[in-house]
Image 1: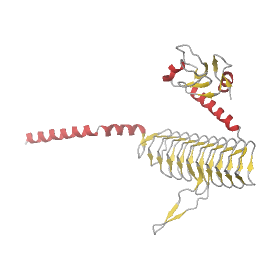
Image 2 (image 1 turned 180 degrees about the vertical axis):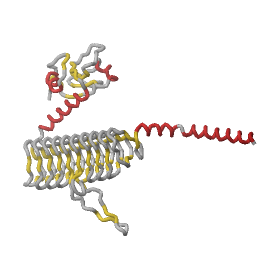
Image 3 (image 1 turned 90 degrees about the vertical axis):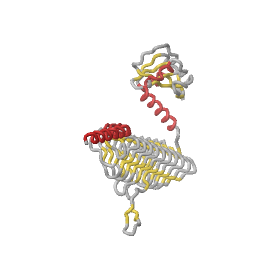
Image 4 (image 1 turned 60 degrees about the vertical axis):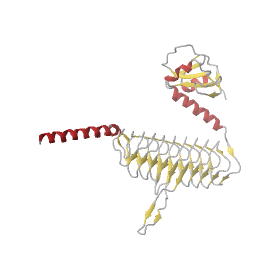
Amino acid sequence: MEFTAGQIAALIQGKIEGDAAISVSSFGKIEEALNGQLAFLANPKYEDYLYSTNASIVLLNDSLELKHQVKATLIRVKDPYSAFATLLDQYEKLQTQQLMGIEQPSFVHESVKMGNQVYIGAFTYIDQNTTIGNNVKIFPNCYLGPNVEIGNNSIILPGVKIYNNCKVGRDVKIHAGVVIGSDGFGFAPQTNGTFIKVPQIGNVVIEDNVEIGANATIDRATMGSTLIKSGAKIDNLVQIAHNVEIGSNTVIAAQAGVSGSTKIGNNVMIGGQAGIVGHIQIADGSKINAQSGVSKSIRLPNTAVTGSPAFEYSSALRSQAVNRNLPEMEKRLSELEQIIKSLRLNAD
């Protein structure tokens, strides 16, 4: 697939400097790109590559003033990184749109309702009364249980398992190995030291424009729904427990874990390997640093926390500074004790 500079500029509302008819068929880093590829310049420290790159087209900031002559055709935009992301997204969609039909061997129950331009990869099993929207792409080795719903334009990548009654919205992307709707970790302790399993009869609801990274797990609710709201982005290897709510446009980095019944607000940022206990609330706009352990609710919006147990970010930094100075402080304290001891002996 080839695209001209003119077509690309129209898609991202860019301004062309150079040959509008020049075309590209792939992408490359600005320092490595070849003729026929498109690159972008967003970080100023890579500017020198702009004047030596072999890329045919380069996206760059509309305010950047050139220091030297450039061989490539330039497309100026307000935000090169976001514009480049838009192009990659469109490129990927064009590739997946070509996939259609049901590969064999696969099993699709006769009661399944299926929209137009659907693709189902080989060795996929789709159980009864499941609904699949238009332009959905389900890659090989997936399992969709009974009564599952998949909204229009969603992409289910290889090896995904979606248990019964779970709902996936529109324009959702679920990466390889994700498990949605497995049982929540619910066991009732008994007086004799054993545990009785609490059946998990709820489901998982994933709203529109959500992305879930590879091998993440989202447990079904004990009752009701575990809820991932629109625009949320969940990284690889994240664990979301039963009855959790993740707010709109919240992002969670890899290996983080959220315990049961915790409610996370909108536009929250959670760093990698952070752990959040159950039954608490995280206010809108909160920022949780990597490897933090959050054991209490964060009720004030836009609060940043770090540490384990996590507490307010600037206070945590001051505490770390004090900890670094403890050896020197101990030395000074010992010297003061010696001075006081000497003064007392002299006074006697």
